[in-house]
Length: 116
Image (cartoon, rainbow, N blue to C red):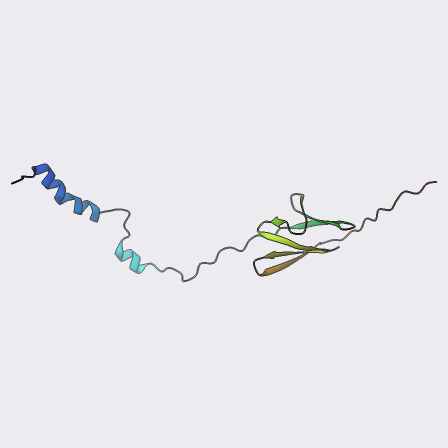
């Protein structure tokens, strides 16, 4: 009959004890006492700051903080720019629509030069 070496026999007895003392296994008592919230709220995304609007004929751009120039359809900070008008822009994220309005409006009218 095959005889196991004493060290192998000892190893076979110790392996179940080692696996039971796994430090990565959660403690059953602390798992019962901990209270886990049912819902965890993710922070809402930061809405970009509108700093300017440029409209020249059909060419329209919204300027956001950091001098980021965006056209309709462009994405910024997880939002999609869906509309630009003279004083505000509309952004969409999922089913939520947000309207950003310029704090102060200014108008610059450029006309063609006239000969003297």
